[in-house]
Length: 519
Figure (spheres, rainbow, N blue to C red):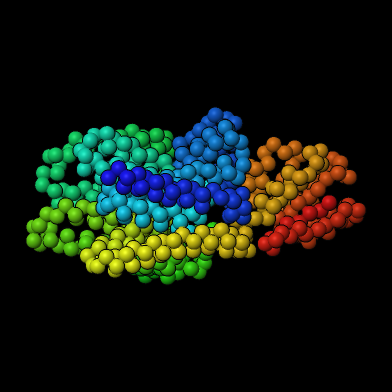
């Protein structure tokens, strides 16, 4: 028994280590740039460090919950500003999600489902990709798996500490990402399921439920105060402009708009994925073929189990405790899919549905476990063949996704464009220039933010919008340089007339991205 436990711990450690490696390896170059939305998070972190004003909610860039930016600020303060420290919170929480998926899978089902689900989380392109982008949404899957793990553990152990920890982590969820706001629906429906399936549930657990609620409220209180009392305007978001319920969006065809959005949100897992190169490798689905088939089988299996146990409870009055976990997973999937299918912009959208990430891989783990359990009832040779084929598939899935991300996707020109790689090229080039040389960067507001964040201490760097470029007047007309993210012939001609001895040139990198220099 001790040897078996040791083997499980070693295997889990290797899975988590692999997931961490796939998330941190070559982070300076893949993805090939720092997207402006990432840089805004870094800008808020820098401002917070400079002013000491660490906020629960940062209103810039359409408003964002502040926990993620505050994590970045801490890393900037202690380890300096870099691409790694900007992205490290995403890497860390993406890795924690692997561990949490194992714990939850083991708690709900068994160790094997926990291990397989955590491995799929570790190597999936979808999970790797977002864990390498500095988006606050990366906090959401980690918060969900750990809060749900402690909740289900508490239901088994009846220990008040598990309910307290689970509630506190769940309350932290309000500080993560807008999609979390629908998460309480999961617990409300799960509570009704528990009441329906377990005799005297409220009588036995009401104190534990109260502990969970109190600790949730404690963790969520700063954001609740921010939203509902101090700044109620923050509660409004861009979702109002992209909701399927908006007449401006659905054009009077609510049912048609909803069904299209819902179908696309489901199709992304197996048929036609997110078409945004920042989120996926278009046009392919977000899951590899093996994981996609396993997800689909597990999803259908959970749906059948959910409907079957509900039918028994309602029509035959049979109380089956197994109903709880299937209803829970079923509701979790659709609740966290809702932020995607209730909007009608950019679908399929792998980011808005990131809250489904752990449950998708739990569905897949259920499938692998289902066939392994079936094999155990057959001959020794058949069992070994099934186990061997399962191991082969899992190894294939790992290599497939790692190569897909780090070799194919990361080297595509479309990926470079999606992350404004030429902006990062300018940022790197600025570091090579003499400090005393005047440097003028001509670009739009969002594109300049990554340069400003990553070059905050460079002297003599000035920024201008394209419409302001003709008014640039360097102090030393013999020692300055102008850099452009986009070619503008009118600006170039104007500079060449004013400075006939200077030369305009295009700098193109190995991926085909260009920026322009007047020097």
